Structures are given as structure tokens and as C-alpha cells.
Image (cartoon, rainbow, N blue to C red):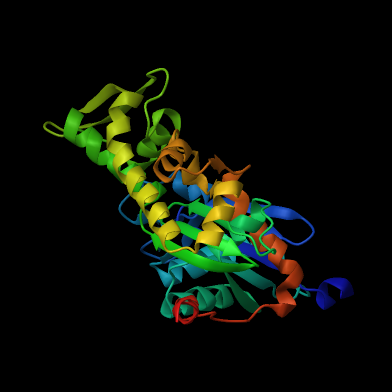
Length: 349
């Protein structure tokens, strides 16, 4: 008991649009839940958090709302985010009466503003954190993927999450060039929903769209055209319908946003020094994040940029593993806002 009082349960937090993952020092990843909250609007009481709440999406009665409190990589509903983190922090630390509040390292998109930084910090503190430290998501992803970014050598990471895609060139534990765009997993889902409505006259939900993306989604033609039977609502008469949709159907629709990601990767390379580009050409481009597993995406980026491109092992967990690795040098990190935007401007002067 005294030991728990003296030593904090330090946590690494990947606060993503689609999922929340928490790493606890000495234990590894202890929480991996969808970032969804189910709320009773009449009482304001949280009914479910995580996977149980995700199962309620599109299936709740009028007094219950299931929602994502984060959009495009940033907090859109502060109160719901705080309540979600309170529940997940308790689950991670199994806090008792004498357990101290944890210190927390939180990943943020590379394009985050100072206002958004402060929102993340305030939410974590209100949820029970004692101190909060921020780390850029692509930097954490690189560490989690096992890249050696401590040397004067260039590495490139493309972290494709649910709400944002973060692209960064890293060297000497810092970011040499970066970009953040709101084209990621959620936009792929929305693209599938729009495509099915346009071509088949059928409305499907986000859960179905995500399942289609995972099972038959692709951005370059597959060797074999695979199909999937999906159910939805007819646009004209509102009746239930089923259709068999193939990977070839989705390829044209999904390749458009995928090409935008590839173009942005090329744009970041154009802003990078020739020496670092030479290093990247030798080391290759590393893809992380759940969105990186979309079939053919690595090949599309490789063909566009002319640089070998590969998906990291366990790409969905790279950021939280990187946050976990940073816990060992937390005492040297800057507490509070790191004002990434201002630092980036200063580097460009």
C-alpha cells in the first residue's frame, strides 16, 4: 500500500478518433477500446464506454445517444471526453484509496494548435491525471515501430489513424518536416457510404462501411475480385435490402482519397533537405496506424514517391507503444503545452 502511494502509475495515452489505447509502465497495453460513449440524455449518466458503446451506434432509443467525443484527431465534446477518460483511467490503474494520480504522456497530431493542446491537457487532468506531457503522434509512432530516430539520419513515418493522417520526417529525436491532413480511416468509411448510396441506392451505417473497408476495401486492384454481401435500407421505399459488393466496386472510390495521401507524402518530401531524402530512400517509408492496413495503400504510396514503403508490425499500436517508451524519459519532457505550431515556424526561420 505504501509502495502504491509513493510511486505513480505512469500512463501512455493514444487518444485517437477511433480508439483509445493506454500503456502502463511495467504492464504494457492495458486498455484498448473504441473511443465511443453511450449517454442517457435524460439523466446525463454514462451507460457504456468503449466496445459496449460502439455496439449501440445506430441502435439506441431516443433517450440514449452513442457518440464519438473526438473528431478529426481533436476533442469535439470536452465533457464526454473527460467522462470517457475517467472510466478508462480507472480501468487501467484499478485505483484504490491510496493510489496516487498518474502522470500521463498523450499523443497529439503534428498539426495541432495550442488551443487544441490545452483542451487535451485539461481533459486529461479533469479525468484524473496528475501531470500531462504531450508528444507528437508521428514521433511516438516511429518509436513504437522500432525505428532508430536518435541518430542524424532521416526516417519518414506516415501515421494513418481514424481522423487524421500525420506525415513526418524524423531525425535526432525531432521532427524535421511534417504535415497533418484530415484524410484517414473515417473519411474512407464515409466514402464507402456515399458510394453505396450513389451506385446501389442503399443506405448503410458506419459499422457496415468499416467492415467493408477491412474485408474487401482496396486502393489498387486485387489479384482476385472478392465480394461481400451487405444489408442496408433502400433509399426510395425505406425497405431492407441486401447487395453483393465487390472489391473492384470500392477500388475506384477509395483510390481517390488514397492518392491525396500519397500526394501529401510527396509534398513533405519536397520540403525535406536532399540529405534526409537520401536517407529516407535508403531506409524506406514506414506506415503506421489502423488505416495503413488498407489493401494496396503501401504500394500506391511507393509507386507515387519512388521510395520503398512498408507497414509496421502491429501498426494500430505503434503510437501507444511509443508513448509507453517515452515514459522512461518523462522527467526530461516539458510539462503542459508544447506549442508544436510555434516550434515548427521557428525551425523554418
